[in-house]
Image (cartoon, rainbow over all chains, first blue to last red; front, side, top):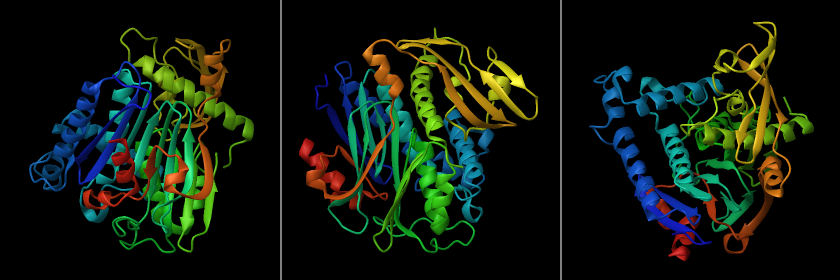
Length: 243
Length: 154
């Protein structure tokens, strides 16, 4: 059973790495087994790298969305919601294709963290490839400095409740975010952009969308109620948005 | 649109109690779901106006309306939330009843405003539990700060 430091597990799947820490006397390794199984299940269903995944079959036109498992339909619905909320800056339909990958990881992490809480954890810290869902606390999340390896540019502290911290930027794997209107890397792009909100599905898709907006990110984030955001510009300046 | 400071505080309260309420709503014997849990998720395509069932509303059907959810008994005390919707969009949320009394409830109600400290620090001295950064690959993880933290935990 978990002690004050908590139980810890690292899971390699979905082309990245998930780090899970849970606290609480009532949560045991079995809850971590289930979280790990869930993440691997999501990879099997949603991977665009697996020819037999539901998402690959939908993209090839072999499977109609309405015939999919409920979780696939849920993701499709959430993709549509994110697209609407961001005015088209987040999209799973870029270039006529179908790729919900930009939403799936954050959603899978949010769901896994909820399940761990339901399993009796008093604190959950689940990091999926650099995007974090927290429950309980206190937790301290460092925001990696995009221009200074080994340093953090800010620390987000959460004492209780649900909180998600998502960071978008080109730092770790080259620029994979494009302006959906031009297909190019964002103009006047930021070195990194961090969005803090309750759930990781929203925080992650909003960080992606706002990052793609380039210079328009700040004004858009300021218009979102309840959002905290933090950005490092290409020349190392920083700005933040508080609710 | 910048939230007024007072409303910000209230929204925060709502967010916290909503998490609690949502968690309870998942239990088989929970109270009916009220408008409360949906209040902070202004992005959701709201089924709120017609979806509260037990809530009460005021205002015109098409313009701005105020809806009050039922009081829900949570393990921290009674919670009741009021939201204002304009058409299909939630424009305001307010907790009209929040738990008070014992200290634990006060903590819950005073909630989780995240603290954002902007300061460049060495990761070792920042006393952090985890690291948020641009998405890393399995290979990128090997050299990441998160990997170092994970190894330190064993």
